[in-house]
Image (cartoon, rainbow, N blue to C red):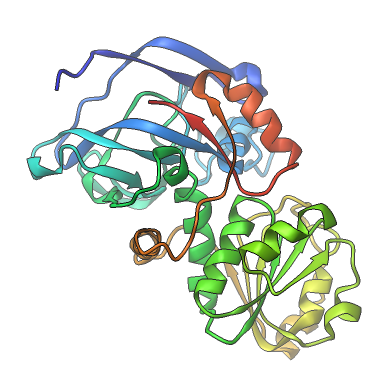
Length: 348
């Protein structure tokens, strides 16, 4: 196929609000380096990662530009964001089998190789390197996973970041069949993914959510739902949960430890309720609890996720779709959290 020299897309021009997102029709189409593939993007998901990067939420200090990415390094502008990507390979670089051209792929969000080199620490698609909020993107071939599925690009784009994050949390916490897992923040993209993935492992799922979203989470596989303002110990009993998957943190965080059994495991990958919590360190050591901070994906996680999608063990949950040009509106609706599942942008 003839590959154009320019493309349409959205660039982030600096840290700040939606006004920092700029629609362009003169972006340069990336060329593949050794070991790379270039992908025509079909769809890209909206999630907290891109918004947090734009607003410098990851920064721990006032000098936002100095530590405002996942890796704690300065962000290079302009940047094409977009960590959730489904598309089709259109060309390959030196050393990549040309038979990959035409493959439909999902891009692994956690990048371990770029510019032909293995990275000392992971990059993240749309943060340390350009992502999917444009018609074309480039990535190392190893991070483009071929997928055979009847699902649409929009449906497939709902999976990469949120579902791999959830699967990584369950992998790190070693959730087993028959165990009880409590998912805090269960109605969001990662939370609803964790509900499905935990059920696929044969676990009993307790989903913490608002009453308005309880039915949809029970449909996804939650055995029980709890209001986020409930008294967890009164509802569940102390020492009743094997694993906690937490996307919320915030002021109610100590209650999560109260319901964990001795020897239970806690996995966290978000803090939408507030990033500072109160910990009685005695609870941690007297109950022999294990804590797992989950960002970089374990090597097997994304391949396992693709396998689950292909075998229809999990299903996409797309709440709404928008054209890429309407990204500001999509991110605004996303931030209101009035839905269950994912918002996806149509790119191709």
